[in-house]
Image 1 (tube, helix red, strand yellow):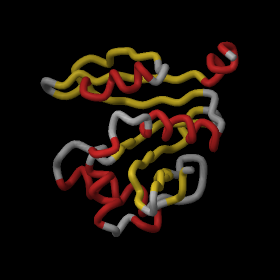
Image 2 (tube, helix red, strand yellow):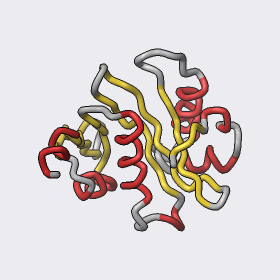
Image 3 (tube, one colour):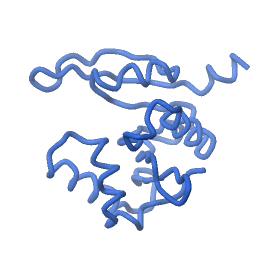
Length: 149
């Protein structure tokens, strides 16, 4: 089950986990922490939820509503020793169940694009947005899930 971990952003373990979801530079982690600490209520609010197992947060997902029925994933991470066990996909499925968006989107690089592809996201290249780094837009349509049922 996903739990709100916004108030736990000062914990080293939470910051380390969030660090796995950002470009490996201290200012990127600091920017991500401040994004969630300074979140205000409303449609554009950035939320940070964690997945707890045996009293430890082993995964997190940070997101915001782009509009009334579309959520953008800003950050998603699972601790290294729990990867490849389905927790990342579980974070997405629980987010879909909790918020019930029609569309879920994420932007990523080559290292995570296969994760999204295997989680039934449609993937399209955005080209080289940063020197030497191709980016991808990943889109999940919840309506497609209903049609498959």
